[in-house]
Each structure stands twice: as structure tokens, then as C-alpha cells.
Amino acid sequence: VEEQVRSERMKVELVTNVSHDLKTPLTSIINYVDLLSKEELAPAYANDYVKIIAQKADRLKNLVQDLFEISRANSGAIELHPEQIDVVALVEQTIAEMDQRADALGLELRTQFAVPRLMVWADGKKLHRVFENLLGNALKYSLAGTRIYIAVFPLGQAATIIFKNIANYEMHFSPEDIVERFQRGDASRTTEGSGLGLAIAKSFVELCGGTLAIEVDGDLFKATASLPICAQPEAEAPPPELTHQEEPEERPPAPGESPEAPAEEP
Image (tube, rainbow, N blue to C red; front, side, top):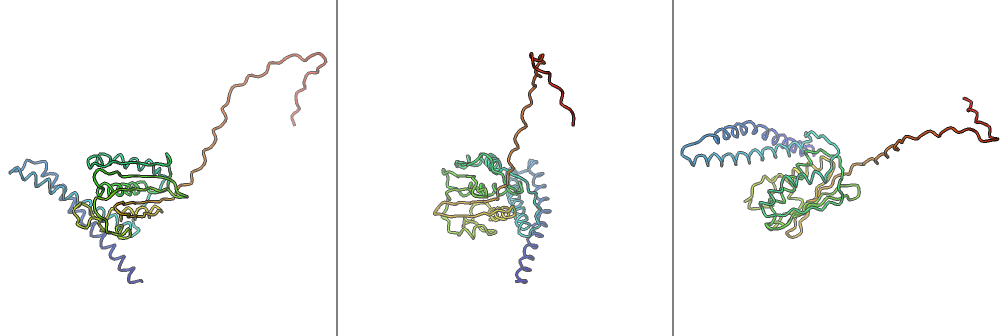
């Protein structure tokens, strides 16, 4: 067991160090490609070559960044900043950011929010990355002309967030395998992707104290994230509104009535 733990730790450290060392030369490549793209090269088709290099360099940058993040998450070296997060608002923000991409792909996003607000205790940036990866995965692999359903509702003491879509390919993988690193549902690997999106989402959800479950039913792909709900304190009742009250007018004592004596101080 000790040997296996040591081997796993060394593997994680190797991936972390390699991905970190790749950042410096990759940054230089991207910067020089950006400079070349601003020049009018001759012959003219050389400008097209520069655009292709820029696209591939950007894809490599995303792959290295994903590799770096999953390695840090697995090693426990990632820094968290937990706070109260409204998952309904965060899901709406993610949808707004990717809505144009859905329209371009001929996909319709349908939302089902059981409550207007649902607070959880999590790292906002990490949770936003989770929703980006889950929705991005659905957009990438959904059958054209279909709908993607996003639901948010409380279930017991957990906030449940579900992403459902119809796949554009036949799914032969198991739910346990697809969340592993470098696993791709598209066996032909014709689509762009690193195979790290679901692994990162699973790691980040678990770091926030939740769980991520994958279900496959025929062509239906379903990802369910569950996060513990914050204990929301009851709103304090507002203080009673103070109104000006007029003092009663003094009246003379009635016949046979003795005037009131002032109360003695104790």
C-alpha cells in the first residue's frame, strides 16, 4: 500500500511539474504568433498558416492548463476560497455566457429552477468552472436540433444541479470510466477536447464537499452535481415603525374628582 501511495504521489508530482514547465515555452510561442499575426506576410497564404498555428497553440494552452489544474486538485495542493454562492444565479450566468454558442450549434437550452435562490458553501470560481465544463460537454456532444435541460432544485440537505442532453454518438462507456482523466466518450477522438473536463468537474465538486454522478440511458447523458445547502438564518423582523403621538391635552378635574398626585420616585 505504501508503495502504491508513493507511486501515485510521484505520478501526480511528475504531471504537475511537466505541465508547469510547459507553460513558459508555450507562452513565448503564443506571444510570437500574436506578433506574426499583426504582420502582412508574403506570400499571402503564410498568414493562414499563422492563424492555424495560433489555433493549435491556444488549444495546447488549454490542455496544459487543464492538466495543471487536475494535478493540483488530485494532490490537494489547490487553494480554495469558500463562500456563500447562489447556484441558481451561477447557473444562469453560465448559460448566458454560452447561449450564443448553443444557438450557433442549433441547440436549445431549457431551464427548470424549482426555487429562485439556493445557497451553497463553495468556491465560486471552482464551481463556475464545474458548470462551464458540464454545459460545454453537453454542447460539444449533443445531437443537433435537440434540447439541453438544466435543472436546479433542493433535495433534502443538498442542492442538486442536473445537465441532460441527447448524445450525437453511440455511448459505449460506463459512467465510472468517463470521469477518469483523459477518457473521451468519442472513441474516434474527432472532436477537440482533452478528456479532462469531467475529471476536473468531479474533482472540483468533491473539493467543495459535494458529489458528481454520471448516468447513461441509451442516448441520454445525465450529469448530476450535489452540494450541501447553507444553513440560511431567518430574516430578522424589522423594528416597529415609530410614529409621533400627540400628548393628551390636560383637562381640569371634574366636580368631586381630586387631581392626580404625581407618582413618587422609588
